Image (cartoon, rainbow, N blue to C red):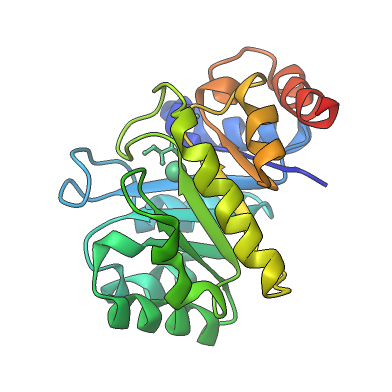
Length: 221
Ligand code: DX5
Ligand code: ZN
């Protein structure tokens, strides 16, 4: 079963609670929350107070994508704020500290994801693969919504799917950036099972139709 994770980056922040309720009733599986610090990526988005508020407003599964420098400093606070899954970037710190971040997230009873930027090789996931619950492959340079899908990342998605299968792991494989009803099928073919979609869901008036379209196109292939 393919999971769809709308990214709130493309939502109307003046009425965020309503936007989240809308995608929940429209059939979304996860809510993808992009956190940016202006250092790891050249943009700033939302942080802990927004997640705390949303946590009180919905029981949706929160997939928190930390695009922040040295996330090990903050992962426990994001768990406390209400994240169900916390994604850290492999490029944001040393291997040792990234392993520590994963361990801290899991010690809080939450799921841990490790994310790779487009320029990072598939092999970079190996030190974390046995301990993380999800791998997130970026198909745009992180920092902004509404960019074009980088199809040159598809071999990396396939390679990581093979690594997961070879080890018999239950690890999920998520794709983020430029996913729409057309590119979703490419991601699924390559082995992804969780699709983040910002503009392709929140950018459309009828969110249920948008989610249905992504799901239908994913199943065709
Ligand atoms: C980019 C973010 C994405 C973004 C996706 O840095 O991590 O989650 O919101 O937006 P779309 O689907 O519009 O590419
Ligand atoms: Zn994201």
